[in-house]
Image (cartoon, rainbow, N blue to C red; front, side, top):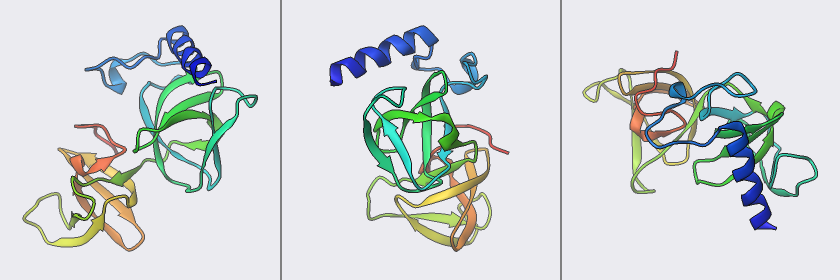
Length: 174
C-alpha cells in the first residue's frame, strides 16, 4: 500500500510541477491550480482534520489532526486536495476547505526543555514579556527583519524568527 502512495505522490507532483527544489522559496515557484505558490504555510481550520494517504476520499485516513490553528506547509496540490507537512515532518493529503490562510507558527527550541523569550520589542535588549515552551502554537501577526510578532493565550510580543516553524527564513508577513 505504501509504495502505491509514494508512486502516486511522485506522479502527481511531477504532473503538477510541484516538486520542491532546494534553494527555492515560495515566491520563486510558479502558482498552481489554486493560484497560490508551492510551498506555502497555512493552518488547520478545524479541530478535526482527516489526513489521507492520497488525494481522494477513497484513500484511507492515515491520522486525524485534533487542533485548529496548527500550522502546516502545503507541498503539493491535486485538484481540491493539498499535500501538507507538519512541524514533525509527517505528510499526507487534506481537503482544501479544511485549511485556512491564517498564519500560525509553532515555537521550536534546540532543547525541548528550553524556553523561548518573547520580547516587548523586536530587540533582545528589550524587556521579556513571556517565556514559551517548545510546541506552543501562536498566531503570527507580523514578521520583518528576522523578528515576528506573535500572540496567543496570555502572551503578545516579539520572537526571533528562527524560533518558529511556520514562517520561512527572512519571510515578511504583514
